[in-house]
Image: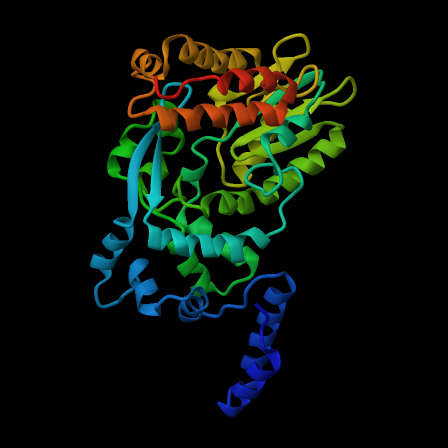
Length: 379
């Protein structure tokens, strides 16, 4: 998406634009172009690049001055709200954008956000990088320190999303529009269901209930990565100074040392996290010493990187009972866990887990895949 510098300058002079205006626009375009970003000046220009009507885009983000309240509500009707059960027993609220909004957000992700240079220590939501790569950083550690960020996406408001697009280099008005396209509001009930610690820590946020990064929007992971980049670089420098190792996968921060080196203090870690606009989730802070179970992003790291025996056993039990009693019988016995599943959906779910095990430990998955292929999916 190259920018026609010469043609732009010629047209600007024909329209009798000032030299100051021309110099500003060319410098702006050059900076974006050199960094691989599309040169975009306004919401109207963005609509043209995406291939949608500018009025549609303006209405979508609630920026129609003739009907602000109606369009403001219209934006949030473009999301489907539902809950997913988490492994720890709680629920995660998903805000999935409608197809038209998702198309626009994907364009922004592919053409803008994915071009941003992240720190090497950032391992989450990057092409060609996985939880295996994150765990590999901390292999064979003497001590591992795990730190979790509290309500990661909820603390990234529309105002902070605006900052992400300004960091990329876009002008203020366009950055504001891009922030509005990529944020949304939770239902009021969501904020009321916070636990006491979250309510106290995020009380100012709960009062305002601002638009935040929606879990379910394709743009959210990269915007969060961009806004955490300065924090990553600060921890990288600290890790180098103290001869320890650091990586981040989304809201999971991991520090580790071998026989040499020193972990940063929790006080200093908390200060850096707070400085960068995030909050530490004290309940999930963990120290894991050598000789005890050590794991990073769900993978064990003690003797090489592996999937835990408990996880492999749970998956193999599904295969065993499906072969012994039939898929339908197994699903009916696990009705609460697999509510709404049919044999096809369960097949895909189970196969996905087996593929994950294979990606980490091929040898362990061979027997499981062999038995999986013997399941009669029509019984």
